Amino acid sequence: MESQPQMEPKSVYAGTRRWPRHHVNVPVMIVSESRMQRREVAAIATELNEGGLALCTDIDLSVGDVVEIAFVVSCCALPLKFKGVVRNRHRYGCYYGIEFLDTSEAQRGEIVLLCQVLRSDAGFLDS
Picture 1 (tube, rainbow, N blue to C red):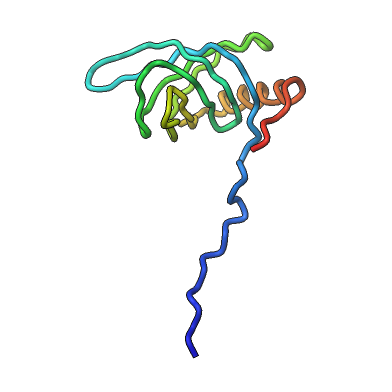
Picture 2: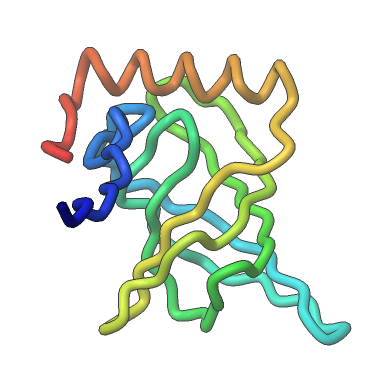
């Protein structure tokens, strides 16, 4: 009798996100340092959740690049500044997925508060 190949069980998280995403349209400033060059570029955050954000910018970033992101959200007037890593890049353009790195307890609290405000106002994205 031939044995069937063992299939890896699918993760219970496959196809789901850790946090719901929110539509936003928030100007942000990106600071990127590479090869002893510091660049500050304006961008637009288009999605936000407790773990990171999606943004559109003219700067050329690569997956794995570490950046600083600063923005002010008008609904709560909180100036927010985070360090993040580029986790994905849309192959046809200037869209990037950024995961927040090394967030302090205070920063996590600020982003949770912001997401609560967005949850009550803007709703969630489907996936």
